[in-house]
Length: 262
Image (tube, rainbow, N blue to C red; front, side):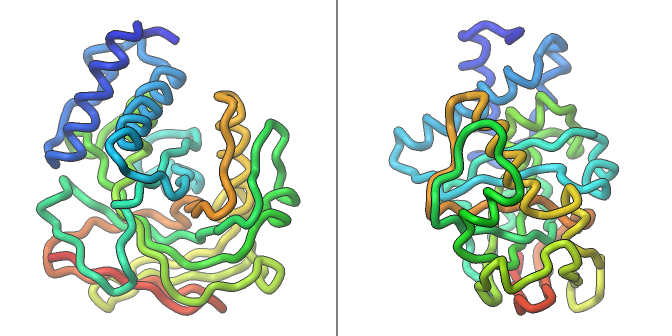
């Protein structure tokens, strides 16, 4: 840890206010070049605990930057994680108020829902699949709180890995019924195809993203509880959206999910 407890608390306030007020800030490492990955997670967890103390529930976890397409798009070469708060959830086909976000982008994902706890170092794909209740298609709305969507790893981690909103839909199916590596997806933007991909784009297998998050959480003595939603990361690059837009994801064997912006 490079930063003092007092600075971490101050930066947590800055980052959360940027989210709640939908106002962009400069990436943290500009003023604090010594900030490291651990500092980023410390800030993220401070904000998470403040939300819990105000009555919000943490309903899941998101893996971030788990595909080469996403890493290239934002210029960060290491995966991360963030939490999903209850108010991030949006219903399939519902409309998101664009004014509550800064510069949102939408990415296609495969979501896991657990029926067993996952915790401890050494988590692997087999353990993840054994603890999975079902799989669903998901759209994640990412919204970096940093100016021009520019950040480094410690800054994006502090910003909850750009987590903002998420939408689940389609069909819920057992993992054993799907070939998650070859599962194909197409994401459309205002009815036009924007990107195509397959599950293997996410660390070779989407369950690897879940295992990665469990292993990162183990460093802090935490895990993922049964019933949690885990977003495994963007399969393709994200599409920028504005008021009036619609984004739809169609996933092989899982149906479709869509969201509107106004």
